[in-house]
Amino acid sequence: MRFWKCLEADCQDGETYFHKGLCRSCTEYSETGEVLNAVSRIRVTQSGTPYETYEARQTPSLTKRDFVDARRRKMTNKERAYITEMYEQAHNIPHVHDEHCGHEIEPNQELLEIGESLTVVEDSFNNLVSTPTESMTFAESEEE
Image (cartoon, rainbow, N blue to C red; front, side, top):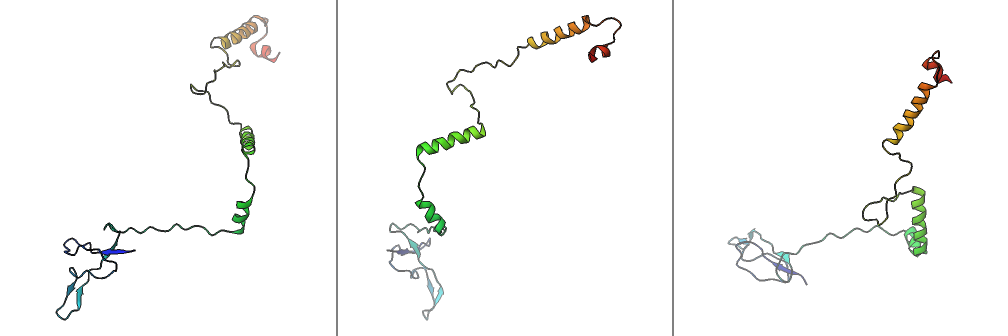
């Protein structure tokens, strides 16, 4: 059912009606009975609060393709896991180690210690300096 009520601030009519119309206590009439200032009742709920209209969601129309897709066989969990694994391998998503993953972080063997790289360069420099004869220039020693 629908309910209607006048919600004007100074209205003496506090009743709820089953039909829309003009509030008789708030509407101004002339001496001949013509309406001068009309005040309509507003739709309310059964408790008397204003009724709120909701916009209907517009659903897209269904096509034959949607119907066929709905009838298609769904993937199993094993198939879904296999596809996810293949996707991760294809995109090579690395695992990031942190304090929450539970793995122990192994040191990278390719990385050199801080002083280790300098000793290799110093040894090669010492070999270059001590090997060439006094008559050879530095440019000639590099060519060899």
